[in-house]
Length: 205
Image 1 (cartoon, rainbow, N blue to C red):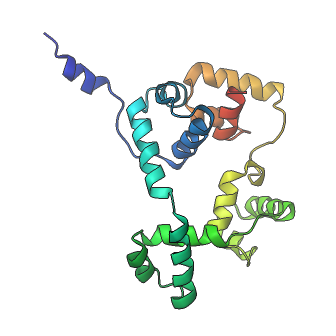
Image 2 (cartoon, rainbow, N blue to C red):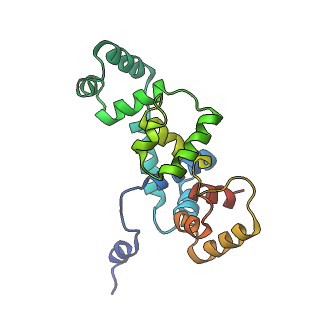
Image 3 (tube, one colour):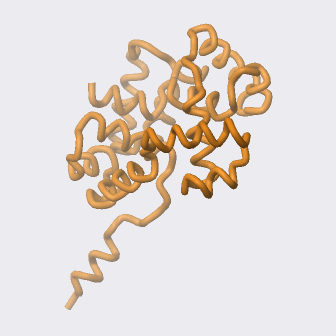
């Protein structure tokens, strides 16, 4: 007689580390659908993430990412008084070195202009993924700020188109969905001219 517990273990999704693409997909899904974890699991992570796994990862991420205003004040005062002594700052605040650094970069970052965004697109076209050379083009921007802006703006990626989808893209999209379902990275690769996030947005339009 087959054991249902064994069948569950055999059929459950393989556990693996969340990718940056998955985390961005999760953020978009929660912003649109709230805490409908089963719906998000079925429609955004079919056969890869269970509803409980999606809920746990979102709650865990919120705890890790949320900064209180008092923490921001302490962080800025510490840097003003002691400079970028991240080990000491990390010990005082109780967050990792990288989270303190990233939070500081967020606090001091300024809005990007259209000219800067276009310059970033051209720089990426010229230097590909050589971020050090790209950063040299933006002496007033940190590498963290540059990469974050690139990640959040499809317009900075010369490989992806913006605006209305043409018939070729739509046909490729339909073919990809038919063959691979909602595996957005694979769908994006087949379409070729749209990012995974753009594919999700087109699907949910």
